[in-house]
Image 1: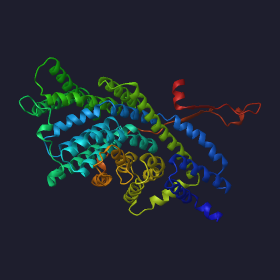
Image 2: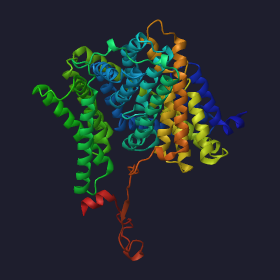
Image 3: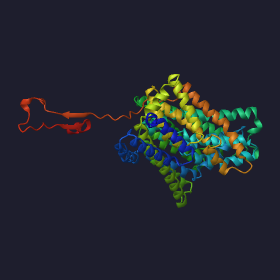
Image 4: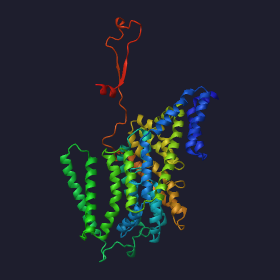
Length: 554
């Protein structure tokens, strides 16, 4: 029996962890307890040395000193401040008026605002609760199907998990040892494509079941001109002018800065167009030029502040001016300024945001500490080799590995949160993916899209719970569950598309995360010659230095 346990310690340890998790025991403590229990068993059986557990303090201090993880509280705080700043209400009301005249217009507005909130808040709970409180009653009042309305809101809220600044991508980059900025760049295109697929589903419903997604009635459209015109024409003219200005500036900048990267050119050009539109709208309002309609002016003043925050945070990260942690700090400051502009900033708002941020940050750190204890012992019993042999020997090579891993993540997402999946499974499958020649940034984005379904899975999806907490009584829980299923299928299709077309996720210039340290040993040229040995028998002095120290001395 003892020989069997020693030979199969890794699978037994993993099976015990699954039992711990399914028992409902808190994940952080289940991980740590499992690791310590099997560490003591391994020491008792002679499989491990007691010195192994002495590495735990250094590992925990390493977690505390990890600058990358500082981005999590910054982005969480930013999202919670923005949730209470009135930005979501203004966006949903204005964009709903803009898309209102077309069938499914409010659903399109929810998807658009969901993507915009994802790029500013990065917090699923904030997005789902805000849109559930504001949009769901409106959609039900004007005859939307309950399942479609609840499904669109829940799915749009989960975009915060894949569109930067996503907390999932920060954790994924940390666990895979890759740059957060590169992970953000790689995830942007899949996030926008997923948003477009949600819109395509609403379009299909509005065509084949038009009574499920009606247009807003005439009396609900309150941003009209005095003559009854919608005012969309002047908005289109302003949009064309802004795009033309951005396009012209991009050509000029490329000609004067031939070495500039495409990201840098695109961000500067887009920023110029957005600032120009905002300045023109300000001049139109305060100089009473009368060139913009009420609709155009309202859209500009509501849309530009969150876009400015997106460019402040993601733009500086993409062009290399700021790290994700610094970008998160600027985003938190920008969120406070937006709340001040909307006259929503008060001590109650700040204290609630800080308390929620502290709770989430402690939750993440405790899970990470628990997973560190588990991983240390699991590697000590050669669990990483067991996982590698198990997954690398699958039929189909890299493709078979990807299919099995994605099915595993999809299944476990029914029961586990994305933080738990990222801290438990990603460190196990990441090294195997790298040995199979899979790019880890691509792999991280793929798993991020997959883990996004953990918020949508009936019956345990957190987004569904958030929506249930704010939905009216006439919306049944079964309506929310059935409404989520088509969007879960869309996310599964997105996972398949990324596997089939890897070019959907790409970063042109990746950050090298490996530390280049060169050890220099300065020894006498004739060291080893008996004639040059010290008379008193002492060894010659050797000078050790790293390459950086050597450069400084020179």
